[in-house]
Image (cartoon, rainbow, N blue to C red; front, side, top):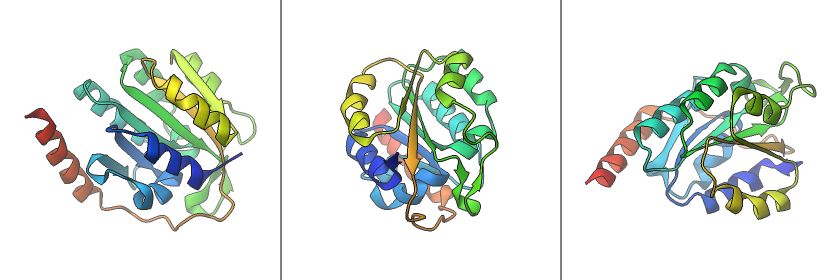
Length: 190
């Protein structure tokens, strides 16, 4: 299992100028680790919608790499998004799923199908051309730079460990984040 905090830290160190749409488990850490908050879009209060927001950004800004940092429970609430993403085939979208088989935000209850589902196989069946699963941090660190060179959509499932419960979940100020992202993207367009 990959410690969640270390996975998020590595993604922050690796992101470059990617726009990061994040929600639930990864956003607990991301808000304190991000190295470029102007290009972050936290999704709070919209479980299952981070991947749809990321798809919209990927289609509207094909010049930017878009990363979706999703939770397993969130994705399970909107599995249809995988078919939609695959059908649109955004080459610039990387979909990270933090899979700990629990709803950590609401107390750690098991998600439906815990121990049974396989997001890599589901993504491939939906039409994602590339899907990977990692349960070891060193393999993830070694392989990520290479797999990011491929066109998307790409699914990257991270089997994570959440030993300390993580920082508390907060309803991020999404309105302010949207305004920052809009300003940053307007500057890019000039």
